[in-house]
Image (cartoon, rainbow, N blue to C red; front, side, top):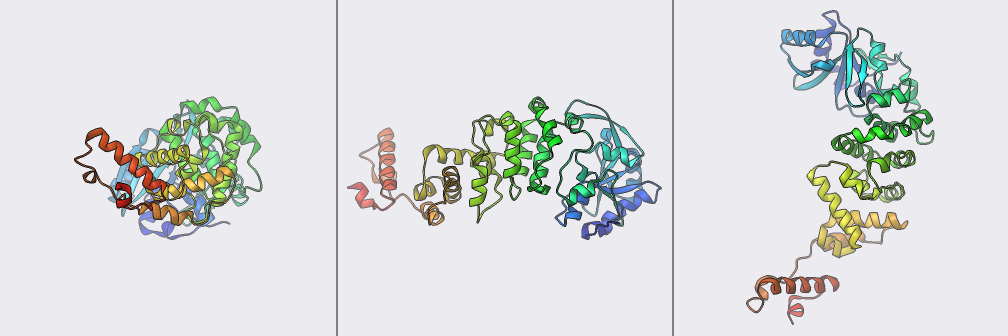
Length: 381
């Protein structure tokens, strides 16, 4: 039998949450990402627990044990229990009664198989008890071990329950799939048949999924499949996957940058189709400006900063299908360190107002065009 382990599982605070359920006669299993990642020996970020106890009973047991229970989604069966500062999301076994593609009407169940069948992918329908013993109701272990991302039972049905699952499929393929095996044809057919449902998704959810997808070590095959199914251009009009693989090939010193990779997708819809943070939007706008103005080297480093100039050079090279020029990182850093030697006081009082601004701009452009070699005296002469 397969067993998982790890400090997170053995943590007394987490074990206390499990025993408050099992000591009261209820089932309690770790489920989803924590089990999947434990099997893959990768980091665990969230601890999710499935149980046949109803939410009001989970709250009652937590209060009796002196643990804080937060009713984060009671109508859907979810209570978050804090133990020693660790959040544990506890959800009652459920089965879907109805869905509109974003929200589901659920009924509580006492059957772990019902709960497994309403999840998205077989590799996410893996459970483990408090001792780490894995329970696999739907054969997800075999898919996980072989890098197969498959929808549970019928792909079309799973997608119609939540259209975001089409994007999650490509993200999971990028992170957990075997690129040599290809993507599941039934899943791709189901995704292609449900493109119109993507339009109902919020820009926040779409943006978050794209960032997670593009943060994978090599998302290029998954994004190419997204392009082929029509998902990419449906969400980001004008975008293309053709430059992503060359960019990833060039990313030696700073890989897995989702914003730089977003810029490689191009298209006018990237910023309109996603709702990103202010900082991410600013970076994306700068990279688009670099590409539009065809600015390179020290000039780009001076104008936009070293990081943006380096990103821009990588993007230019990916689009041209060539290696970046030698020393491009050093030139970007050198440009970033430059300080324009002229200030307004140097031109006053002879020049004022608009004329002053135009003259400063003219001198700065001459200075940049000289590869920053002209001195203050030369510029003022």
